[in-house]
Amino acid sequence: MEFNDKLMQLRKEKGWSQEELGIKINVTRQTISKWELKETTPEMKKLVELSKIFDVSIDSLVGNKSNDIPSQKVVHHYSFGCAPYEYISKIKLFNLPLVHINVGNGHASKAKGIIAIGNYAYGLITIGLFCFGGISIGILPIGLFSLGCLSIGLLLSIGAIAIGTVSIGGISIGIFATGGLAIGFYALGGACFAKNIGVGGYVQAAIAIADIPTGDITFNTNNVIKFNEVQSAINQNLPDTPKFICDFFAKIAELSSMSNYR
Image (cartoon, rainbow, N blue to C red):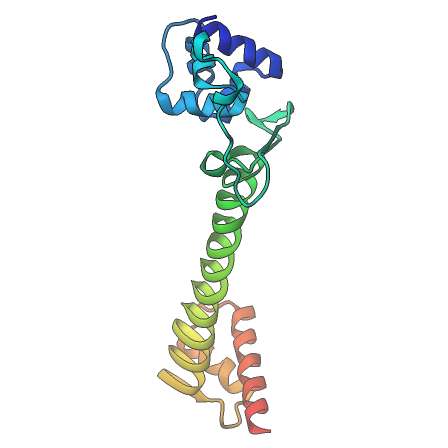
């Protein structure tokens, strides 16, 4: 049996469409169709991936009967101590599977779906080592909302190193940043560098509120700081500051000074 016929037979035995098989090895449905029509043949890298997916030797896959013996079957490489597992839901939204889970296949563990879980995950809700989506959780997540070691979020980012509009982390960079080292327009943390307002141990900002404040206007938290004083300073020097931000930092300043004064 030649490669194109063998591929079609194995795919149908699994009950997969050409598109589903294409997702598993990161090629298009048209590519699978061309292979099965004998118009093109896959490169060696894709042959290896196919042999792993179907649990057959490459010789068997390409129709070399003389070497088609069980001992030459490709051995799967496990990752994180778990056996390979993949699930693709038949329900689709926006031409993506509702759920795609692909784990235990090492570097080949790629998942793409509305909900995607894999080493490399792309979708609306994603979990993986490297993931991109609306809500992302992983080692290196990128999304609207992200949680991970090195986290990049367009809206909210939480991580050891966090970058986002609102960021929380050991090292935090954002419009609103809080962390051990916080950098942003508004910052709160151990050491802060803020364009507008900062509160922390050491702060460099236009309005700095800290044990060691540096800036145009400074409030030392070792002394008594009154809510109205900070509020007035922000309104006079940063008049475009939203009221809730002004009140928030004024209250934090007052509470910080009260804590130190006691």
